[in-house]
Amino acid sequence: MEVKASILVIYTGGTIGMIKDPQTGALHPINMDLLYQSIPVLKNFNYKIDTFSFDPLLDSSNMKPDFWIKLAKIIEDNYENYDGFVVLHGTDTMSYTASVLSFMLENLNKPVILTGSQLPLGVVRTDGRDNIINAVEMAAAKDENTPLIPEVCICFENKLFRGNRTNKFNAENFEAFVSGNYPALAKVGVYIRYKNHLILKPNFKKLKVHYNLDSNVAILKLFPGISENIVKSILSIKGLKAVVMETYGSGNAPTEKWFIDTLKAAIDSGIIILNVTQCKSGSVEIGKYETSIDLGKIGVVGGYDITTESAIAKLMFLLGKNISYNEICSQLQISIRGELTNELLKNE
Ligand code: ASP
Image (cartoon, rainbow, N blue to C red; front, side, top):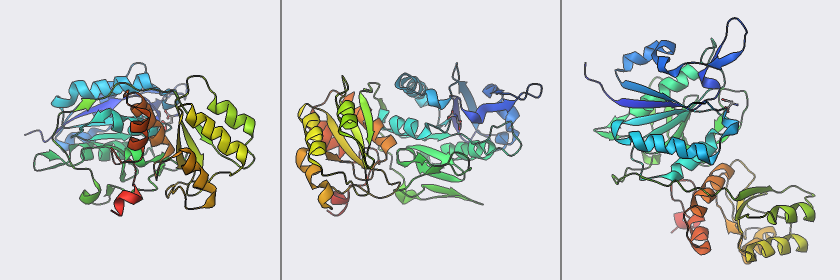
């Protein structure tokens, strides 16, 4: 019988690939080479499914740029040999990995679908089985001969999301991810319903992988009562190049003089400050309220509706590109991989 698609399943670690040792009761990793043994029904797809396991496997809380580089390299090395890629990954930092991969993989014309689970594959009620089956089917989906989803996505609990729009919002429900500012790209029921108009279009250019990531970034989350000392300490970290500042609502922050002066001094010294909202949905609109006017005046960059995860990933990617401060600031305000909606551009 003719093989309908070829998929590489890359197992990085995380709960999904675990099984309970009947003797000790402890969780240990499954041998992913035996994927068909764990989910025999996968054979019915008639796809060629190969597996690659990281060694050592990683709880995703230990995720870091070196690892993202390895992952991107595996995808690059195997890009021509497969129709799509499924990355099995711990849920804790899956949104960061999906975001950073979306920036690293320029001209991606094939699906890279991340999935994981809240319960290990080796547990009776596991959500991992369905998540893998859905992810594999989506990674193989084509329209004529062209992959249907040429982007980095997260497939979880019957939904497909653009990866750089997600955050993990639930530590125990099967529905662990949310995409507060962009609708699901597909929903799974009796059929898989793809929302083609929401999915990025292929550009048929050659894949270009960006391996330089600069992690001299920090997150400054505002809270009522945040002290001058704390803000100053963060902004004076040696080597710091950019800060994702999580503000209130539509990008609002204290108007106190010490606060604005501290941010201004950091910006004048070359630190990029990117304003993102603490809300799970909605956009930063600098100047909408009095409490954000000064931020705009001193050069804080508005991140629109980008998530914190995606903002961190985008900054690491842009800082790694060796481009000017001004160029980084302008790239931060436009969508380069579908990671934000710039209302001003939308209205043009
Ligand atoms: N701590 C695990 C991880 O992120 C949880 C999970 O796999 O969902 O790797």
